[in-house]
Image (cartoon, rainbow, N blue to C red; front, side, top):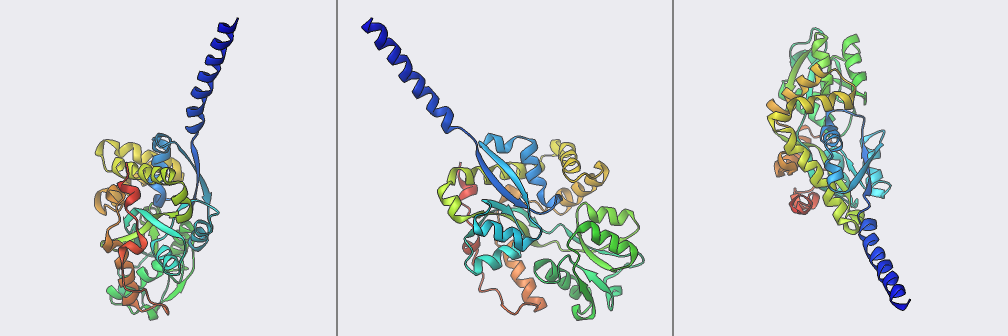
Length: 322
């Protein structure tokens, strides 16, 4: 009898030990603040579809923010753990002491294109008209001012209006409410198919959307923070593989509820021509520094960026981890 009892005790001990690792392997939920579905979030859609998050034992839950400042505030306050924000908004917040850090470049070049309304074939024709970059202040507005200036139009000679939704900008171009607008894929293709013309594309490095982490959360949950960053890194490398082209197009079409042929045009521009998605998700110094240079060039900020220092904004250790 004693030997039987000892045997049962040993079996129970083994059972307890074997259960412990299962509990430890439960996936970590990460709340990711995002804007509306678009090509800005293509890598996120890929990571979900291809199981890259699952490989890292994380479950990523989308939480939609109404604006870029609201998104940044959610990450900064710890209401969410991470987000895909706009580069200039992140830099401003970090300069003011926000506890956030960039762990990778989702887009290392802009996928915003300056599109003219019907009958507008050159930037010079935008003088004296109404235009939109989405917002009237901030990085995208400064980019539009820079493109106008580069095209020979004084930014003070246009009226800038706020139209934060890309679909609304396409409609406004079509009905003449605005004569020029910055559009992201796939909305630029929709506008072109409606008879409008792309006037300019900024082709230098410009971190339009970085992946950001709440620093306090990332310090306490480093494995999960690395997992999120590495999953998106894998998606970035995956999308550049030509054999994945059609699948990438299908993923964007399903994610944005846009026809596949329009998403194919987005792939051609973003991946094959602009090569906008961050290679290996790395953040090029020029991609952040150019944001500050554009702002300085258009002279549209009362509080100037301080001298640029990459390490202030970007921590590559999440990408470099295994």
